[in-house]
Structure formats: structure tokens, C-alpha cells
Length: 461
Image (cartoon, rainbow, N blue to C red; front, side, top):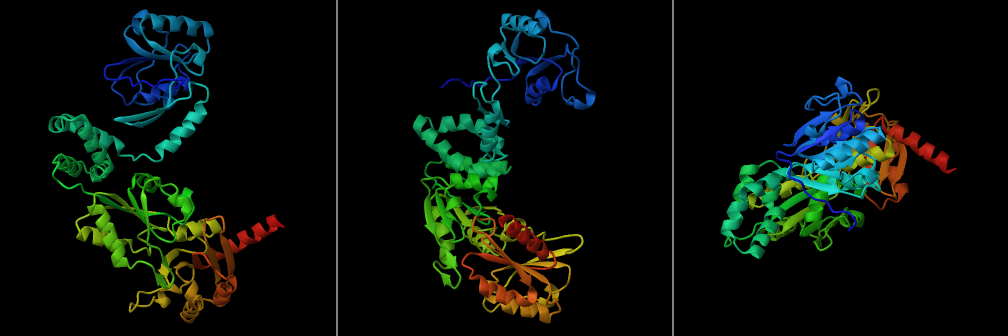
């Protein structure tokens, strides 16, 4: 370890800033929402009013003297005058302060780490001043997996700390309690702002005889590109004890999960159901009742032709704590990757997501409502019925020359985009020998994809 990051309490701490330029302002902004006492000196001139934060202290248009620096805990300086920096640094250190000279680590007692600020929880990333941009990049990656409500969790823990210590005097037992609290429903409820429910759940955990309760997250894995996972989906994947996943969830997404999480495959292929839906729901309930953090990981978005609503109902009926994490649904991802705007002021004033596979015994789609012009259709599970779908749309009034696109493995490295006309959709699908998940797009905007395909072919040539 080449640097040591220390946590400095800011209640009643005096912090002094010297400099009126953007480097000094950047340091000042870090502390505006803290309980510290702030003093700001701008001997090089104050910044324009419009650039000054409204909550900033009034800038003093002079250099500080020894009296100004008395009792200061930290001093930040950003001036061009090297002699003045040396003089003020000596004054600040004589007053007992630690000094940071912006962008001059050799003149500084400490460097400012890249900070992730969640109020009660603050995380710092430091490189000893050698690579601050790298530290910022690392900070961004860490910040992406932290819930915005993390401060609520820490705040609740602080409020209950004495109660927990009184009820669980043994250190190791207390540690196990907090692990359960921070990895279970209580933390999820607190992060979501449901503080009263979170408090009740934490107090319930204090009763050692009470069975540990698990939680289910119904999570959309997106279309397959792991970079299209939402930040929340990534976080709950990395917290999961058990992952129950579908066929459409690729290994590249599963690799983002916690390594020691149990993985249960319940994939369903066209015409083949390896695990019936009621058994999947029973498995989710069983694992949650065993005290596990369960992620039900589904391709795309769980609430768009993903049966997520059925699973949500089943969890609620069983009294299992359940949360839903949306995902990037296939229509959005495939359209974006293929260059198909789902709406366009000149070509499509409406978009409809529709499935070509009706529930057995269920009603067919209303083709007359779907066949209007200037209307984009994103058709899920439509490759088996492509010819029938095209015939129904044409019979309902859609022009046979309407552009269509077929996007296979959208957003993935092996993506394919095929384009044509509505009256040739069946032949287009048959000739494609599709093996991966595919979406059909019907509408004037599908012609944008044909143009993009032509450009790709031209570049490849």
C-alpha cells in the first residue's frame, strides 16, 4: 500500500480554500453539502457570479492571514504564484492544517481521492496523485454498481446500532446479523426509501428464533450484450445467492454474477419447455423461503412478453418479498442496433409491441388495428408465423410493399439484419435459416435499416 486513505469527520471542521479559478471551485464543490465550516479566499479574483455555486461562502478578495488559518483542518490552494503558495503553505502548516496544492502533489501533504458520495457512505479511490484520471474512471465503475439509496441503508444502521449491540453482545454474532441485514430485504427496502418497512425487518432479524427470510428480484437481463445490463441489474446479480435463468441469458451476462452463486437453468426453447412455469415459480418460492437472495434472470424485460407479471403474482401470493428490475427489451435493443427508429415524425407516429404466439386458446391479435400506415410493429416470437403474419396484415389493409426487417441476435457480436418487403416476409425468414432469437419489424421506418445494411456492405467491400 503506497497511500493510506483516512476518514476525517467533517462536523465542525474548518476548511479553507484559496483561489478563484476552476481548480479551486472544483475542491469547494466537494464540501458544499457537508457540515464543515468553509472559508474561501480569492486573491487572484473571484469567479463570475454565474459560475459560483449558490451555496458557496462569500469569497474574500485577499489572501488569508495567520488568524484566518487558525484551527483549520484542511487547506486547499490553487494559485499560479509559486512564492505565494510556499508562504501560505507554511502559514497553514504552522496552524496545524493539512495542505493540498491542486495539481502539485510534491507540494501537498495529501491528495484528494476520486470520491463516491452517498452521504453516510463515502468511497475514495486514490493513486497517490500519479494518475487522477484513472482514479476517476475506477470511481465511475464502482459508482455504477452502488444503489442511489445506499445512504438510507447506512443511516438506518447508525440509528439501530446501539439497539443491535445491546441485543447481540457477541461480536461475531453481531457481525453475522449485519451481514444478513445488509444482504437481505431490509437493505433493499431502505435503499428504495421504504424506511419504516426496513426498520421493521431489521428489528425482526434481531429475534434469533425468527427464520431468516429471503428475497426475489425478477431481473431483465436485456438482449444479450452485457453492457446493456442496467446498473441495478448488475448490483443485484452480484449480491445473489441463487440465480434462476433462462435460455436467452448468455454466459457473458452470467459472468457478471457473484462467482459462488448457485445457478439454476430453467431455459425454454421454442416448442420445448424444460421446466414448466409453475415449477419455476415454486422453485423461486422455495429458495427465498430458505433465506436466499434469489435473482430470476430473464432475457429482455421481464414485463414485456416475459411472464414476469405471473411470477410477481406468485411471489406476492406466497408472501415472498419481491422486487422487479427492468431490462432493455429486445425491440429497443434490436431496433437501435439495426438503425430502425421505432417512431419518426415523418414515417411513424405509433409503435406497437406484439407477439405472434397467442396463448393457447387465447384471442388472436386484432390485425385491423395493427395494419394502419405510419405505424411500426415490433413482432416478438414471430419467425414461425412470419408468412401468416404478413398475410394477415396485408388482408387487413397494410401495403404489400411496406418495408420489413428481421434482426437476429440483436446487439450481440453475431447479429444479422435482413430487409425486404411485407409480401416477401415469409420467404425472407425461410431463407435466413435463423438459429438465434429474432425480432420482426414492419413499417416505414424499417427502410432505415435497409440503408444501414447497404452502408455496411459498402464499407466491407
